[in-house]
Length: 90
Image 1 (tube, one colour):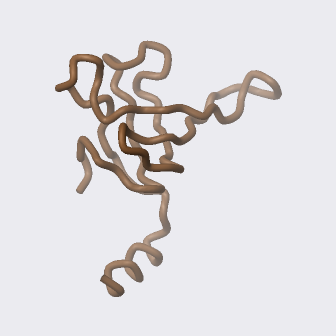
Image 2 (image 1 turned 180 degrees about the horizontal axis):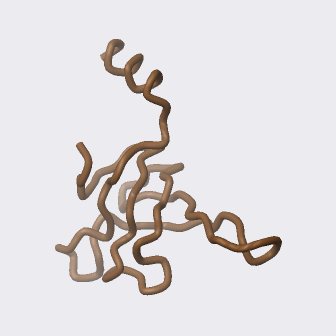
């Protein structure tokens, strides 16, 4: 499933497209909420004290042109044991 352009799920790790956002492009976003237009999650900002930490970020499924993906799924933040349980329960 890696490389999916969306829709994404909670705990997916999405790499923000540099073409979508110059500041957060290439950052890894951990999805915390799924919305109809895209996802909301957080990115980690490097740094110490007040300069570092997590920033909440909203990422649509598509860039402004309506065709190009705003990010790609690169993995999941869920533990493998949880993924295996979910697959067995499906």
